[in-house]
Amino acid sequence: MSVTLSRRELGTALAAGSANAKQSRPNLVFVFSDQQSYDMLGSSGNRQIITPQLDAFARESVRFRHCVANSPLCTPYRGVLLSGQHPLRNGALENDIQMLPGQGKYFGEVLRKAGYQTGYIGKWHLYGGNRVRPIPAGEYRYGFDGTFLSNNCTVVFDENRAYYWDEKGQRQRYGDWEPYAQTRQAEEFIDRQGEDPFALFLSWHPPHNWAPVNPPAKGPEDQYGAPEDMLRLYDPEAIRVRGNCENTASHRRVYRGHMAMCSSLDQAFGQLMKKLAAKGLADNTIVVFTSDHGDTLLSHGFKHNKMRPEAESIRVPLLVRFPRALRPRTSDLLVGTLDLMPTLLGLMGLTVPGTCEGQNLAEAIRTGADNTVESVPLFLLNLDWRGVYTRRHTYAFDTSRPGGDALYRNAYFQTPEHVRWNCLYDRQRDQWELRNMYGESEAARTQQRLHEQSLAWMKKFGDSGFSYDSVLQAAMSPQDLALRKSGKYFQQRSGILLGQPAALLAAGGG
Image (tube, rainbow, N blue to C red; front, top):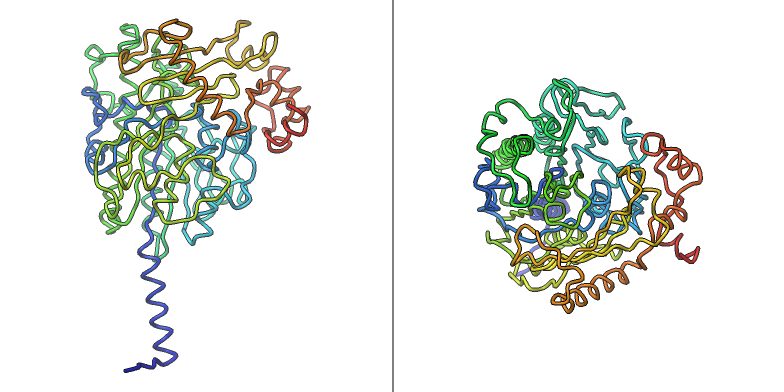
């Protein structure tokens, strides 16, 4: 028996089908902190940090033991995350250099084209040049047009100074601990959503070291402030520092402030999860928690918080909850920043752009195929080192050229000496990476194998081990190069490149 529908009935049926299709497509909530190492969660085995909300979330999630920041610095990480491309392609070479436009191929742009309502709240750090300015609507928001509330990049989180730029380009003070206020903005974004699927990125700046003013910071121990109720959770005399950090009162204060900031993020994360549950959205929302890179927290005596190949700098938490499709478990799958965009698009059932240079690991995550990836590439172009991370080893080598590459290093490290990055660690035998086996005869075969893997990754990215000076000479304007040499580089440069570094290097024979 055939059934003939009236035009009105047919229209109603089509509309219902369209609404059901929209509702079946998962939402995405991507939450990331700044400078939070893998070991700074209770669910990672840290028994002194207080993160009950994230620990409960971890029990409902796929918990990745080996998520690595391919390039452990703020702007390069964010560029890789939102473009799916190596810095030689997207231009986000180092902090305060502007990422190139995406031409419709970046994460937010793909989501927008697929009908998602996009939102971005929090730290941005992709616009380049002067940090104290709003991000204009258009191609430099890379697809996050629906809601965009950011302060670009500041290092002040307290209620008296933390602020954001509104859609009119006016600076608005939060009047609260920054992550708490940003989380409320995220909740308001969720409240505004209708039947279309949505994708929200929430970028918290803590637990990054910052600059409290009462009293003014005098040393590292004064650069890790937090709300008083969070600080009271920790007794500085009882703090246990990492096994590769000197146990001093000053260092314990650093750890106390850092962990107190992590606890404040935990509270904020719990509030956000309550909002999703109250709206009935938890089952059909992919929720991700991770961080852009770690914080060395004075491990190995390092004066700088990141940019190193050691685990405290590159290894970060990654928790992914998707009740509709993923069973909670602990995963040994290797995941790098480059893999996040293609993998999440894969989990969402969306087409991955051919410009993505990472792997779509969605099927490996669904099926538990944790041996899918052998190694993850490591690279920090602005400090001239490359390497790989495997389940057992970390390897990095210095790619600098004799007599060159001093321009950036002298300006940043205030030293005429080259910083050497050559390292080989066996993390299975040496948890705290206290023995650098680089150049040891008994590790020669392992070092050769890891070096060959590093070179294979570099070939994939079109990276011949370019010195950073040569990259800048090819891609940066003469005016910005002059500012770099003048010592005013960080404050006054435009941050705008002449084009894609890889293409410019190829054209110039670099």
